Image (cartoon, rainbow over all chains, first blue to last red; front, side, top):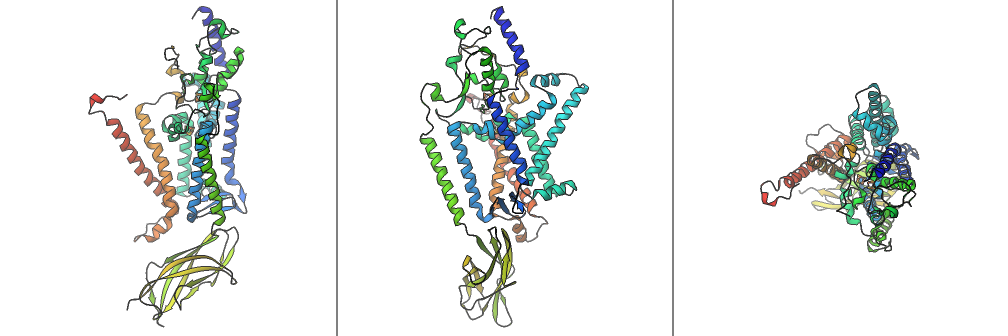
Length: 461
Length: 108
Ligand code: SF4
Ligand code: SF4
């Protein structure tokens, strides 16, 4: 490197320090910030949205029912929930095959919260350079103030995150009221602290280390990659041989490629890799290096896109196909699952009956010679409207059933345990167990909306 | 890509804490704690979709005083513990595999 180049290089460095150094500007950075703030907004606001007098999204663990806007799911509907999760996984596969790690770059909670924590760090400790100087410097008043401010912001934000998290599982209005009157239950307190702490650690301290060393998806996503997948890549053909040069000089003039070897792409990379070494599993395709490199290209007067979103095929000068066996299979499966999901949802029984025999006695012999068994019948109304039903029992001639009250009014989306006494004259059936059927009929002689079999035991003597 | 090119590797000092490489030990701890946490979350969901901790208590001969939230909480940490132990043993086996056969020294 001759002296002139060194000076040019040096001045370029000085400029970088001032302008970029980790704080990147550019279209992808803007896109990422927009995505992050939108997702954060949804996360913190969603539990506060009401829906017909209750929380719109509430995974009510104490009551064992899940509310998703107009839909209420019970443990009996576990199928739907697992179906939803499988669909989410397939969607992730599909998006990975087509667009690479867009999830990582723009939507993963790890990325989104890291973005927020880094932002808080920036407004308190300043830019990357200031932060480093602050870290190395002595404990001045300013350092103490800035560091404390950061921690306080982080802790408040993390606590609010934990509170919101628990608010998805128990009604958030009550939770808030109890928080303000210092009346939280031990588990609520614990989970708020636990989730808050996890957020603080993961987003404040570990950041992209989570992606590099802890995240399973980061390691197996390459299985969904092929040569048509969108990746962040350095155009080596155009960039090499890299080298510094005076501003205003074309690469061709000095026998170099377009990469001026300023190393900015490495400095801004949150996972600390050099994208010019080729595709690496650490790369979360955050596109920070694209924005950084584009601004260098602008400054040099070179065309943008030395580092860009592209595909292996495009880099090799071949066409990129979005439709290919892999994506067709993922998309087809996804459609199929979605259709089955909708169909099953439409077919879902609006009411179910669960019958549990009294644990303490198989049967009772009543003074009049009747045999009586007591059951707990759990009636589950999945609809958003109240419903009135009567219980009936069938399967043996002479069976009589009584419930209290005889007509049962079920509130919307609720479970109601009903004690049901079933009697049969002692000689009406042979000894041993018999299958009987409980039926729930809409009140006023309507149709049977649910049925469930149970055992009725006759004494042996 | 251009292995022969001299490349400027940023100084360790240049890097922010989150850009630095972790030690093998730290990597091992992370690889044990986090996936087992995810596994425990999944197991808790599956298990308590079918089992109501409220009914579990009724079924006990000597019911302990607890509510559903305690059931979920204890269940989660129980599953996490099991998964932690299993992952830790796996890592231990992998990390000690070559210690006794030096000829097969592809450690780093
Ligand atoms: S690597 Fe894992 S943790 Fe990191 S952004 Fe991607 S999915 Fe999230
Ligand atoms: S190389 Fe680094 S900066 Fe560039 S996209 Fe990948 S993770 Fe982001």
